[in-house]
Amino acid sequence: MKICKLILQLLIPLFFVLCSEDDGTDIMKTGTLTIEGTDYSLSHGEIAVSGEITPPGDVYGHLVYLLSSDFNLTETEVQGTGQLIELHFWTLSADYIEPGTYTIFDEENPDVNTFINGFYKSLNRETNVCTNYYLGVSGTITVVKTGSTYTLTMNILTDKYANVTMGVPPAGNPIATGITIVCSFTGELKQKYFG
Image (cartoon, rainbow, N blue to C red; front, side):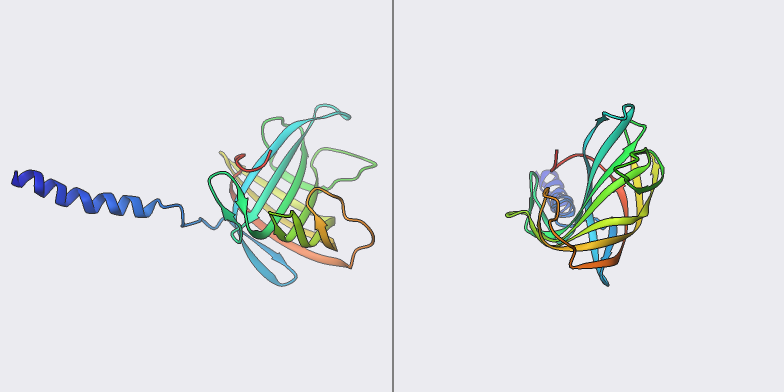
């Protein structure tokens, strides 16, 4: 009987230590986003949709979302208000984003190794409206892939719009131009919340 009590006394603290280390509250910081001099920590990234683009054919689009740690990420949804980056990559691979340097997509000359982006600042997930939206007009994204881990590094010149709804192109003229956004992200891109 004394051995059973001793085993229980040793196992119970171990159980609490193991549970407390995996309670989901310790979000790994996987990147940074800098908008107009303010830094935001990125905590989640995912490829939401992949598919063939026709025309030009044999070109594949990958929709990627990067989220700041300002959001409350539950098991099934993104809640609250935070920063969200939306990236559309065009590549020759159907299965992954190919490593390389990507430039802004040109509607008149669509090609591989191009992208379209949108930066949603203070996006409210209940209304899907952000205080400011930044649309890239020039710049690059460098993609490095090691195993299943991506490293995305971007330096993009943007136009700024006010009060844009997610998924709806901005209307009218920008409220500011020539704003540089710098961002880096390292981590796996697995579909979870979008798509």
